[in-house]
Structure formats: structure tokens, C-alpha cells
Image (tube, rainbow, N blue to C red):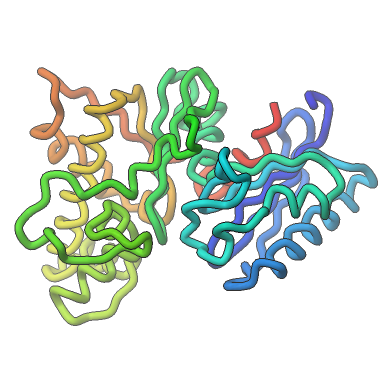
Length: 301
């Protein structure tokens, strides 16, 4: 595959991003389209059409890697744990392989993000990279020596569906996650979670971007919401540091663009780190929104 063109696709809940790379990694073309929501068959058809459109530029086949907001169960071959719930329990790998008439690779989108940033992004040169996506949901991926650590159940790095660590009294039993459990990290440490928290405290329905903008302007309700979010993110990341002790943490997703996060996190994390010192390496992604789709293409070595 070293001399083959690569297609990467990142399947999100609202958009599908695609990229075509030369064998040397140079970008030929990128595209974005709206995701077909709640329609599995249309999703398969859209992905097939997208691959064929990109390959029409080459007049030849390319390797195909796809990132999804879930993973392929090693036990069943079906999609598991996708917050785009219409993909769950579906044979996406098999159906797309047949539709495209070739072997393809499908991996969790946060794993794709982590792989991209570890290979030639912000985490390049670090042995253990924990890649975190903080957007609509909250995903994570682990890369060690430039190789994904997925585990026997394909859930390596999935920190978002563990309980929020060191919860305050007001955080206990407060929210139910889409997965069916209460108080998952994803309920709090995500754009959706930030918006819901702001609504509970202020009765204002704002998205995370607007909350961050108001917080930067010094508006107290938004600033208080941001501080609660930062505390929850810091506690959650500190727990992961205590478990895997990564060399670098790379933040991705829409909330990774908030500069205040990088200024605030290390000090808040420190009391929760089980070590006599803490030298944080918390990084912005080099490739931003393009990291996930690049990582999907790089699933083929």
C-alpha cells in the first residue's frame, strides 16, 4: 500500500468529511457533505458514492479508511457504541466492503484523530499520545509508538463512558447519558454537556461556542459555566493521566479551539494527579478538523 493513493472518510453525526491523499501524504482534494441522519442504507450509499467520486479524479482505485463515532465489535463484526445510533448493530464493514468491492478499514473516529496527530501532528515524537475529541460527544484514542491501542474489545481509550471522577454533590445523578447510564463523562465534558449545564443554571439555551465567547467577554453566567466545564475536563483528564500516564494529550473537536482551556487545565488538574510533580503536555491539534479524516486515510500504512 506504500505507493497507493489513500481515501479517508470521517463519518460524523451531522457531516461527512472526505480526503484523497497522494502516496506521499499530499492532499489532492477534500470535501464535506451532510450526513444522512437516522438512515443506515442511505449512509452506506453516500459513503460508496463519495469514494467513487474521489476515485474518478484518479481513474484508479485507492485504499479506503473510515472513521465512525463507534467501533466494529471484534466478536460480532457489527457496529457498537455509536452515538449515531442508526449505525449500531449494523454490518457496516461488510456492507461497505461489498459496495466498494475491496477490503476497507473502519476505526473509531477518536482513534483516527489520535493516529493522525501522533504520526505527523502535534503529538509527533511522543511515545504515548492520548487523543481527545471534545465536540458533540467526548471520545478518546491511544497511540503508542505510532500504533493504535484498541484492545480486544475495540474500546481502547474510550474514557467518555466512565463516571465523571471526583463528582460534586450537584453532579451526582444529574443527567442520563444516551448509553443508558447516568453521569458519564460525555454528559459533562462535551459541547452538548456544556450547553445543557448552562441551561440548567441560567435557563439560557446557548451553544458551546456562544458560551465561550461570552465567557471571554467576562459575562459572569457564561464564565461560571466555563469554569464548571474546565473543572470537569481537568478531573477527567487527571484520571486518565493516573491510568496511562501519556507523554502528550492532544485535544480535538470544536471545544479544543478555546485558548482558555490550555491556560486553565494544568493548575486544575494538579491536585488530582497521583505523582509528586506534574509536567503537562496538553496540545492543540496541528490539523484541526482535518485530523480525523487524515487519520482514517492513514489506517493503511
